[in-house]
Amino acid sequence: MNSPVIAVVGTTGVGKSKLAVELALSVKSSAADHSSRGFTWKDSRVLNADAMQIYRGLDVITNKMPVEEQCGVDHLLMSIRNAGEDYVVGEWVHDASDLIKECHEHDTIPIVAGGTHYWIQHLLFPERLASDPQFRSIIRSDETGESPELARSLLTLPGHLKSLYEHLPHRESIASISEEDSYNLHDLLHRIDPIMSQRWHWKDSRKVLRSLEIIKENGRLASQVMRDQDTTESLPRYRTLIFWIYAEPSLLDPRLDGRVDQMIKSGLVRELHSLKAVASTSRASEIPTQGIFQSIGYKEFSAYLNDAPDTFIPDPSSSVSPSFLEGVAQMKLATRQYARRQVRWIRNRLIPAVASPSRGNRAWIYLLDANELGETWELNVRDKAVSIMNQFLANQDDDMPDPLSLSKQAAELLQPPKSSSLPSELLSARRKRICEICTKNPTRPIMIEEGKEWRMHVKSRAHRGRVRREQHLATIRQLREEAAERARLKAAEASGGTT
Ligand SMILES: [Zn+2]
Image (tube, rainbow, N blue to C red; front, side, top):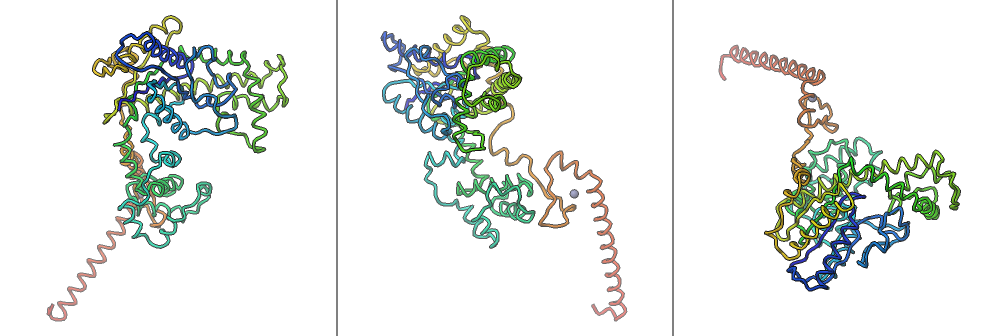
């Protein structure tokens, strides 16, 4: 029941790996000196949550912590794959869950640390992935049948749509789909799941197809899948304590630049060459884009690597070549952009998941100020984290400090985004509606998004022109009908008023 997990998140260059080691050492030492901190955990291990540090070797490009700085703390899920191999979120979540279970069985605290926040989110708040087929196969959902709503609407489908549902087009062929097939796909979605179909224009076949795929994969309406996520998204799998180490971008950026320079000094170029060698043995003519090849550095130096000889020869003059300098600049830029994305993920995804009311396990997230390194870091990051961790591990829930009270920065950044991100709220947002007046061919309807676009549409010349024509025709129709009616009455009178 009590299954604590500690996570350390944040951008590169704020000291995540260092804090993870400090926390683990603190657990170990309090176990060793039998100090009564109110918990009985004996040991602690670090689980790597950095998608690049999964790979063996390549210590520079993946930013791995040197072994001597690990201070004897076990680091798991690190250096477990070769460059060129794939390792995806579902596999990591699966492996990390197993290791966490094993840790708990041995009175050991798992500390998950890394910058791949997407992975951490799916480990700690798993239901978000429910509609992801890759993950579903791992969590082994045993839903097989179709929901009653889906079964009912499938029964009433006309033949051509029924067979379309059974043989959905492939995603690769969707770009070249005909207008007729586009409309049929949307019509199919509309008949099965009208709420979902309102979200997409009928010409937006890629999205329409994706909704249909979700329906097939889940055996339920796509709109229902989205609603279910509202109720399940915040079920922390563990009793969770998250530390977000944060530095202001203006202070972090120069630090990140310096890191790139340091990586080059430490042998980045040699590693890039070895990656190039791996790439050349994989399928010819195709630049690998998966796994380690996504790491910042490889893409950025591709022009330089193309020009360079196949085997690495240390050559000081190459480090001033234009393509090399361009690579350095690109890598610095990409590193900064990556840091921004990491922060956005925490603010838009992780914080709402922590903040939304949950049943069962509780989760906390604390922001720690890493604007300065050195002694200040030890005070603001390490010491604060250790003290919060001790309360957490002693189950003193009521004594846990209010995360927003820690600093001004915390109060601002830990506030969940104002607009609620409930998946089902998307269902009623940006609905498309058909303009009956402008639609000439009902199987090629004119669809316009509700709100601003619709208001602009009804004011447009084209639409108003059609409205006037429509009114004019209606008036003529009415006059004709009235004339016919009068003629009938006259005829009736003339025949003696027998009616
Ligand atoms: Zn119109």
